[in-house]
Length: 250
Length: 309
Image (cartoon, rainbow over all chains, first blue to last red):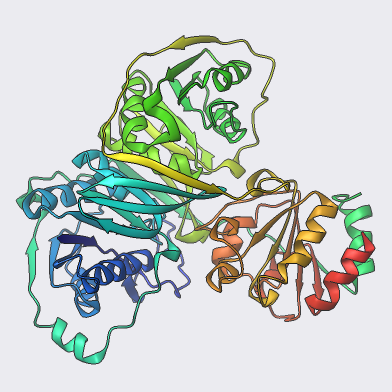
């Protein structure tokens, strides 16, 4: 069984992002970049499927600038067998990325496509669902448990109020939520080995995909600051303030 | 200009989260219709028809729409959406699951988690875990949006009498099957709808200690939430998580107990009207957004608070 796992290059989650001085966009100059945490969980799940003897090949894919090779090498070090970079310097929106992924799905025919539920830069939470629409495959978003049995995948999903279980006919799309697994660290020997693994590069144009943006970023701003209030001395003062000043409890 | 609001419902009743999208649509102006896709969902449709200012309620009532499977519901929404300039749904997990699929079927770049309407094609939305607010302009013919519920006060639920119209299409992909669900049963209000939310963080130490929060919550009629750190540590289930990757809440009173205040968490609660923080670390970032801060050991403070109420 073949697994395609998508990874996105994003600002490292420890970085506090700032706007550019002209407020046109986020300032990404000299900022540490990493694999999106939810994508890392997707890669880990793919590796576990291989360790269980279910997956036979794991292909990591990224759609973005040349530097995404770094994140693909990380995925290879974690256990992916080979990688594909769809290289583009355009600002790529989820719909454009989903179209590139669809074209690769047609060429590679994976049985399962794993993605992170959202990237921590744009917070769009769209690509997996859009790939579902374009391929016509079933989708299980926000997955916290995945099991494969023959031609079906059974997924437990994190939904408002609890958990939902779905069965999908393969090929299918699964997007990883936080609790799907805890990703491993790549070992040094595996990082060295990853450098020799196959990494092919293609472009949206080669795939026949138009990636022209549909949405224009007009600018960014800092959210309204909330100013700190007061420190209370004890519970008695707190309860008094809540009852008589804020009037939020009676 | 005409907006199709997608109702969130459980067939028997409409979820009030739908009213936040109605409010966002009203903020933009133009005609508003509501689409109810479900199975034996006439009661939910009747409720939607009572929302004031709605032109009509369109109902797709068919067995294939049970459990809101994205593969079946998305083509139904896309079919109706083709006649509108805007499609809106409040960003619940159901909408987050279905709406991008609808957008791709329409060849549209969806806009997630809209927190402000600037004009009919320009919207504000949080990015980078709420660290920045982006203003984005869509050039697509149909604007497909999910709405951040806490950013728009819910429109009134009653007083209207819209006509109800049925659509017969049944889209059945045959690709997905509902197996079951485990819904947390609780007498407490739902997190995103509660007037008061009490949340615990890693400082709670373990899941048993959350009993102190449940006891307080029951006295105040509050819901109980948690930080991502508390969920990661396995103290409580993920559906209690408040934060950018969990639930976004904006109650009248938010009490953060043993929560340091990572930006991820603040993004999920900083629009609350009054914020109280109880933490023994006086340097904790949570105090920078709290209206009332108490520097104290929560294991001393919580029993005192419980006794004082």
